Length: 428
Ligand code: CMC
Image: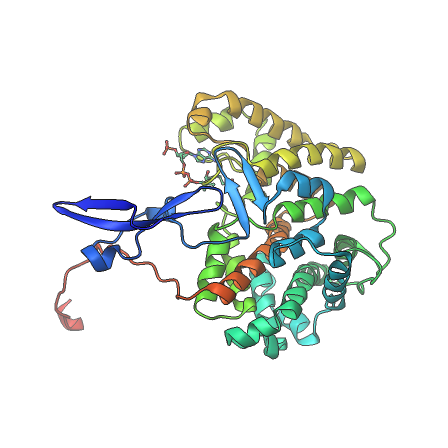
């Protein structure tokens, strides 16, 4: 559609194009507005701003729909696995058997970290958060593979298949290396016959590379969590990653930025915050009702609830809720905080405050309970989100590198001091 919108400001009318997406989403293209009118648009927090056209993920937040490359998340959760879904998210199609074998081979061959990256991980201050270590680890990894990390878009794209496999493989090794270092332990060698998640679990918790003693239910639960996090279109960390990539930066730097953006409690850090919240409620002997009241009064937030895009049940939370029951049963673990979570959900879903604001459980509400049952320390939960999100960040880096033309550079409305003269120090 061309010139289908008219914006009237005062006496002037400006013709603007309308862009329509493949799922009939519509946008007014305001890229020529400033040139025509000297006006920019203003959208604090970008809630109503499309920053790009993308073919990776589709979300309909009102209906609670999430699709990677056209495939419904529930179908992928039932029938696919994390590595196959990673291939789909990154390359746009489900792989043939041969393509999948080659992809896995590339991922598995990179499981081990170069010694200098291990040293860089060990050298981080002992109180560094695992997310800080992951960001630093990714930057060091780029340094250890300078030919994958040139900041020359064509060169970085030419070796993308290798660098993407390297990053997918080693995000788990970086996480496990740090975890074991703090315990004064080494990481067992990766086992070439074991799956991605089997290897990760044995790197984290095993005594050697044999992972036979890890129950399939544990491996499957972790794989599902990673798959459900694989992409989520233009969220805070992915937008950060794309912004960095738009300046021509390599995948390692772009993903390190994505990791930093994910860290915050309103984004990926919410999975840690949920567990802290549930423990607090438990320790206070609250059945959840006092906490809900204080959230309604704006004194706190019900972590794991609400979403910028979903005004409906987050489809990932729906899947994780039932996976949570299965995983805990298979592990033979009973979780008092699961009971509290269920009660909070039940209460919130019938409370007018939450109903009117369309606040539903999001992906973080149940994922932390599963991760805790699997034995992961709470401060690593966001790292696990990052491992799952890695293929999404890579897909968006690739999309920018292949199709992006402009550096991302929003404008602002300046609300500061007008021009004033500099005053010498002795006169202040
Ligand atoms: N508990 C209580 N009230 C809430 C919550 C919540 N979790 N979330 C939103 N509200 C209220 C908010 O106070 C506001 O009320 P009012 O209209 O009276 O001022 C209204 O709902 C709209 O909230 P908002 O902050 O304008 O919504 P947003 O779209 O900017 O924020 C959010 C989305 C996810 C940051 C927010 O819902 C939140 O802070 N949730 C808790 C943190 C969380 O679970 N984050 C994980 C998000 S999913 C994983 C990911 O993508 O990272």
